[in-house]
Length: 117
Image (cartoon, rainbow, N blue to C red; front, side, top):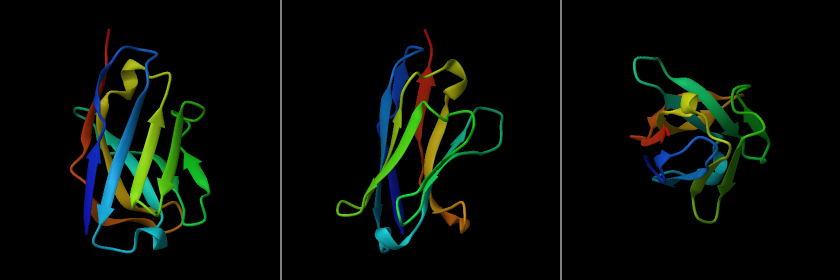
């Protein structure tokens, strides 16, 4: 199992970023998938999940600003992040699993998102 995130960077408050997670080594379409973030000095925070049927779930802190999606033909998970805030600064990781299944031990290495003026 391999999960490789990309798309992070530095952006000003109010800006947008689109994260990608390329999955390989398993049948991507058969798994719920999630995004998790970890800010400096804090534990992991679940951000969003999408199940195999396309139902989406969001943490209250990102609801209305972030959109999760998946492309099963390309084995890729996405996170569109709009109206970014400084408190969104974190390492963003994709993980296999979701709300109903829980996360398993397969996580990517993460991509850094920094929101600062």
